[in-house]
Length: 304
Image (cartoon, rainbow, N blue to C red; front, side, top):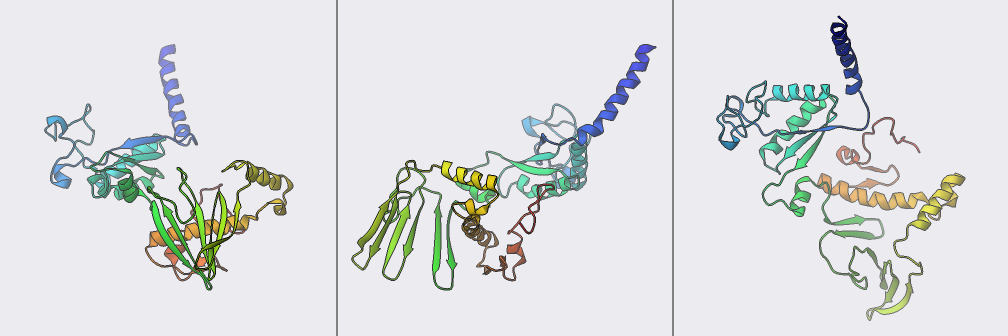
């Protein structure tokens, strides 16, 4: 009699525990998902159910026969049902197999995302070893910014050109390649030009390009971030922005230029920016990239 009572009690404990599991927070959990199955009814033919010489619909390439039979991953009703079941288990992200642009999995990815959103599931992709896959092709297929880019900023009294080379390259002017990633700036004026990098700066004047001035860097260690961190912590402790060696607005302006370049690339057109409003002029799409939809409580207020 005692054993008979324990069984219902155990079942009750498990049932009470399921909602807690489904609503649990971090750590996150993900599930791998193949959207590549096709069947005769929905797609006009079977794919992937036939691997290994199997003959669907009753004989399929699986150790277990699906309760839905040889289904199609392109069937919206099937996708909704699958996402509902995934969400019920407490999994909160679906990682979908992806075989490059133009593939069956690529064509079905929007439907997977749509079905997943109904149940508040996030979606990621697994980059599979599709034909001719390379670092360059992945950047083209899935990248949001190019690895090599040239942008021009037009101001009232000058022009700024910014170039990023993500491929093998040499130096530029007196900025020499040192065997690693390197960064430099060239300033051109009516009477000469200046180059500046980690090693210092040089100023050249006139048509004969005579060096008028130069300076070598004096910091003991290149790329040493310790002084920056120490200065930042000092300002945090004092709660006084004037303790910063460089005001945070300088960093904001520099980062804004990079973001504007990427926004122009993603929209595919020349943009006009209002510096006072910090908005693009008459361009809702470009303005949508200025910020993001934050996940509470991690929200940056409009006025800081």
